[in-house]
Image 1 (cartoon, one colour):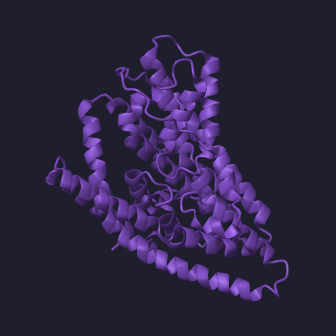
Image 2: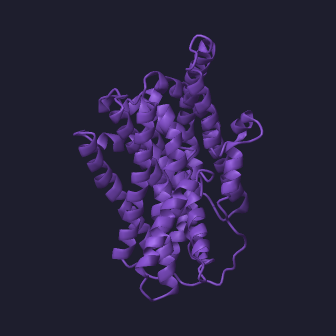
Image 3: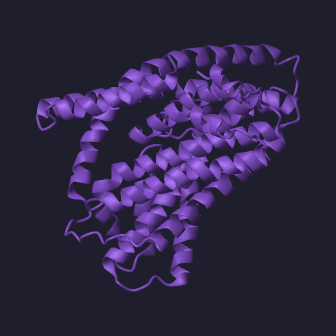
Length: 409
C-alpha cells in the first residue's frame, strides 16, 4: 500500500473518532491528548540522529564533488524567494478580499511571547558541541556540528577515512530506522487527527474565522496547483510538475494536521529519496535548512492575520508605509522561527503585534482561538516549499535520478 494512502486512511479514521468519542468527557480528552503527545514524541524521536549523521556525510560528499557552493546558493535562493512569494500572496489576498471583522473580545494577555534570538545563538554555541545533540527542537545546532565534521573530514581523507565510513554506515542505519518510524507514524496520525478535528469543530462552529480559513485554503490551492508547478515547469523544464505534488501528499497531511515542521522532516526526506529520486548528498543537506528557514507559510498567515486584526480595530485604510512595514517584518521574522517547529506562525503574529505597538500589542488575542488552524496552514505551505524547493536544487545540481510515478512509495 502506498504511504500516502496509509496516512489518508488514518486521517479519515481520526476524523471519524472525533465525532464518535465523547470529547467532552475529561478522561477521554486526557487520553486523546496523551496519545497525541506520544505520537509527536515518536515522530521526532529519530530526527536528530538522522539529521546529524546524514548531514555529516552529505557535506563530505558535496565538498568531494565540488558542489558545496552551488548547492548553498541554490538552497539559499529558493528559501528567500519562496518566502517572499508566499508573503506577497498573503498580502495580495487579504488586500483584494476584505474579510468580515473579528469581534473584539475583552480577553487579557496572560504572557509575553518572544523570539529569544539570544537563546537561539546560545543553542548554536553551547559550552560543549555534544550538547547540540540534546536539542530536539532547534535543529540548526546539531546541523552545524555535523556540517563541521563533514567538511573537515575531507581535509585528509586517509586519516579521517574511518570516521567517514562510520558516519556513512550510521547515516544509512538511522535512515533505515526512520523508515520504520514513518510507517508506524501513520497509525499515530489517528490521534493527531482526532485532536485536531475536535479543535477545528469548536473554531468553525462560531463562524467567525470561516472566511479566513476559506481564504487560506484558496491561497494553498493556488500555490500548490498553479504557482509552484509553473515554477517547476519553466525553471526545471519538467513537463510533469504535478509529480512533486503527488509525492507530497502524505507530508502535507502530516504537516497540516500536526502543525509541526520537525515531525514531517523524515517523511519529506524519504519521499524525496524514494519517490522523486533526489540523491542523499542533496536530500540530507538541504531538508533541515528548509525546515529551519523556509517558513514562508508563517509569513503568509502572519500578514493575513495582522491585517485582519487591523481592520477589526479600525475602519480606516492602512497606510502604504504600514503595509510595507508589515510585509517586510513578517518576511524577516519567518527566518527566525527555527526554534518553534510547532506554533511558529502564531508566535510570529504575536511578535509582529508587539513590534507594531500603537495599541495593537494584544491584537493577536483576536486570533488565538484559531491559532491551531493558522499554524496548520503555515505548516502545509512550508512542507510544500520544502518538497518543491528540494526538487529545484536537485535538478540544478544534477543530483537526481528521476523515477516513474508508478515507483513512488
